[in-house]
Length: 166
Image 1 (cartoon, rainbow, N blue to C red):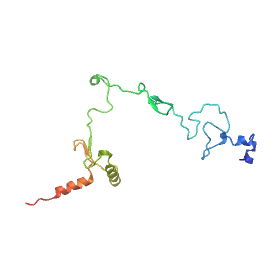
Image 2: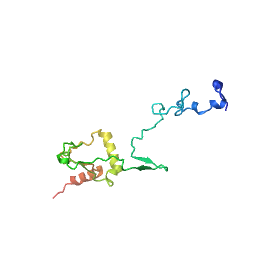
Image 3: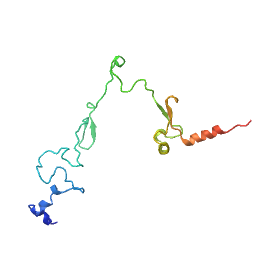
Image 4: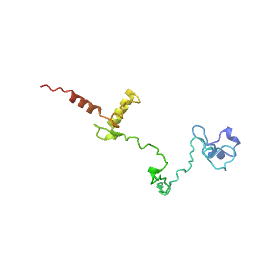
């Protein structure tokens, strides 16, 4: 491959085909190489292009082995110790102790919350009724949120609507 006439200022045709002038499709130069200026400075995130990610090794709780596996050093993992005299301390919890526990049940779905039917019904309800499609007052329902299968609800409604004549 011959260099074009525009690149005649290069020392040789091989020098014009070298990597410092090689670019990505959008025209950005390869990492750490510039067409002019010093190339001996360390490359940090401000000097790289949009594809450059150096990272800061900020997690620091483990390291990679030579086989590419990540080994966690459990001495470096953050742990939060609860004080033994928590009832008498001045510390405040992130969430109040008085907040009630919300229970969720999925009657009519075979695989509970993993059921694809439940996901599909939730998507349909969201599209049809908007963000607040489940307007159940949790205080009145004793903090129990139920996701009932529409087929089961329809079967129960039909069972209740049957009138027994004497």
